[in-house]
Image (cartoon, rainbow, N blue to C red):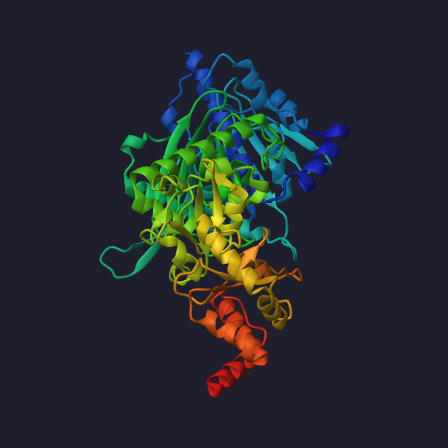
Length: 626
């Protein structure tokens, strides 16, 4: 046995890799299992052309053994094994990948799916081990060898009496520290959880001796015993024929993988072939997670390659507006970085993301058209996210999403799309009308709405992002969105416009007096003939509406805004005559009335009153003077 040294460059790479490349220590088991799977693959592919090899593929397996007393974890396979030269080349030189060479030598075999390509995964064992021992025998010869190393100091290669082809890698765990509890890796639960998370779909059985209990014969007592048990699933659900998968299987998989107590609303299971190939199993949840609209929520799909989990949440595969989608993507067409923990920037990733986005859009559109009840259930949970998708990024994605969003309608108080609204528009209608408020009922009672809904359908916007969404969209099929509470809202005939203009001109001085009585809280006071039965209302002028003022000022920032409001008084209401009389007879009393009707208008709009005590006193004075 001769002591050998890693090459100088390899020492640096090994030190870097152990301390930097891998961010998650438990990854070592994924890497060793993947290498074992590769070794079995190689032997199987060789056996397809070498008829002298007598291989029983049903006996292929990967075994994990744990010895708590010796503090060792051993991963064994019955694959191709290594010769002394291969040991020297593959383990003595960092980043020398036997798997990659094998893959390149067998390019003509389209089904060669070797996982390891970088030749560094094996060395992840040194993150948790103070010493690593490799015992191996190649199928090519009778000799067997042992490779041992304690890290960058070097390694030894000696002879072994191993009889069966294959490789066993034994890791001698480091001692526990305050920061790292390596002993946790010696528990059955931890081994199972790591395998379940990263290597559950390796195509070969991963077996482990586990402890079970059984009832003793002719006794009520139980005894413990150990038996070899397969701890991985091997065949992922998404690789099965979807025609043979039952709904319960999808539901159980979804529940197990994503910890949701409810069944998914929609399952999308498909294969894509073309410039990039992948299999997808996606789920649209029936309800939003408790933290969905918080910073803590992480979007992303599970990303697998050849049955090995690469990323638990690959955020680049989903746009933000579809962040509610959960699921799995399995592909062999993405280059990974050296640690296989993250993706390299790659055009194929963008192609997959674009394809997934188009598929989700298609499925949601189909759901909207074919199963309205189920779509509305989805929309009540995630409609706000679609609206955010329109509003964010300066409206870049509005064309993709605006046919998926819905608002309540004055027609029947039910949700409707823009397309449905436009299909019901009257011939003389030029715009799409909307109103904002906390609830449908409150919006329905707004003075401005009452005067419009008898003629035209009005969309009711009840969520704080709604009006910002419409402002971003701008128009739909050439129809502009118009807020019925806007001062520019105009459904009057020419004669009606002329009449109200004359009334306001005749009362110009009185209206200016009333405006000053409010200390210029409004930019104008005027009479209107747009209202039906209500005495007053507040309208807004400019880009900032009353509802937008409420939304922005409710945010936890120091930036506050004020909408430019106009106090409009119904000239057909008896308050009109009362105000004119007060202006001629008692201007001080007119000030009181002006403030009261202004406060009333603010209350109708859901706006706060700065001085409720003043309002109460004014109302009491007015009632006492009657």
